[in-house]
Image (tube, rainbow, N blue to C red; front, side, top):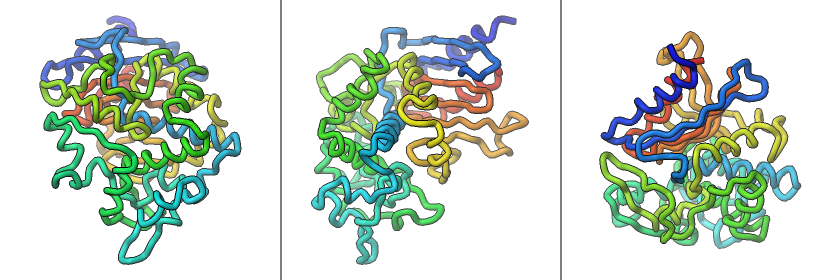
Length: 350
């Protein structure tokens, strides 16, 4: 029959289909309160133990860790208005609907929870009539900066007023703004902040914020059966999706996040007011939740995974009920649901 580790390994290897998934990496670990004693680290396809990869929007949970750490140090309060931490030229006219200016009502928590209403610079068709997302999928490599994002997004109508009940719009613009807030409160670059407050203290020697487009260390992401070589774009994402890592080091971070390293676990429930963003995902304040509706769940109960994923196929999730942590990647953009199908197959083993 094989051990549970053998079964995990079999699921990982079967995920490689050589159609859009050509490499995968996975770590599964139990927590201190788990009845299981699981420690699995595995690789398949063109990814091995020496491969670094882009974790894309999974970066956002690292930003959340920094913001909550800053709050414990009394450097910020996530309920504060962003006007306390960003200059007037950034804030001015960033959120105007029907002639009403909401710019000074936006809070840090609105940005974290995607409830600001600010449009997503990555998905809006503001670059030659198409979105950055589509441009990158076509194989074009382009770069952008913070000032350009702010300028461009001010020409796009916001989707709703900040904090409007049951309204959320997943927007990378929010996290670009949060990155700037962190730089302002720490008076340092985001690269240095992450290095000094997360990577070095946790001993994450192969994790870093991608900022040099000549860096060829991380593996390219696949779209369909082709690798997308877009280093200028990947170096532009920063706070909304710029970290390079591997599954083992993502696991170290994820366990630190949920176990009092950056902030008290008592703060976690305050982050878990969930809003729908795209089926079946929900978003709290800096955290993503994957939980299928009961009708779609193959299990008697509906397992809940809290953490974050990225468009690249990277993921870092914690299941509280069974005290299990999952990190890894399927390194592809073709099927956004692929990491979650993998999670459900893994969960079925426990």
